[in-house]
Length: 218
Image (cartoon, rainbow, N blue to C red; front, side, top):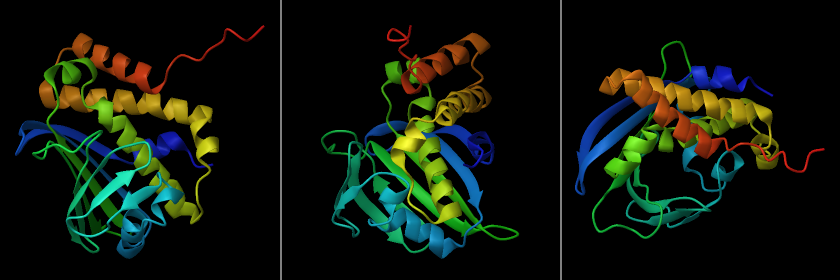
C-alpha cells in the first residue's frame, strides 16, 4: 500500500473567504498533481461507474442542471461541466437549499513535467459556531480522504477495498495529520493564536478519529 502520509504531503492547502447567493462564505482549496493524463483523471472524477472505485456510489441525472446523490453523503446539482477541465456542482447535506450555500469546483490542468494538477475548491456558507469549533478541517479532512482514494485508484487502476482502507491504522494516522494540516492552513490565513487553532484541530481530530473502544480488551 502506498504511503498515506506522503500522499497527504503531496497536496497544498489554503483557506480563504468568498461569497455565494446565500451569503458570505468560507473557501477551502486543495491542489495536487497526479501522474496521470488529464483525460484519465477527468474520467475518474466524472464517470458514475468509475467514481465508486475510489469514492462512493453516486446516482442521478448526469448532465448540467441534473441532480445527483452520493450514497450516505451529500447531493446537489451539476452547474457546469466543461470536459476535461472544469466541473462545478452544489454540495449539500440534507434537503436542497433555495439559494446556493455550498459549491464545489474541480479544475484540471496539465502539470509542468507531465501529469495532471487537480484543484478542488469548496465554497460554503458555514454557521459561525461550526467554523469556530472545527475550522476548515470539518470538510477538509473528508476531501483529503477523497483525493487520497483517487490517487490510490489512479496509481493501480483497480477499485479500492473500502473496508481495508477504512480499517487501516494508516488511515487513522492520515486523518490526524490531515486535521493538523488544515490547522496550519487556518493559522496562515486567519492569524489565529496557537491555542485557538489547536482547539479546532482537536475537535476535528476527535470527530474523524474517535478514540478506540478498549472496553472489550482483557
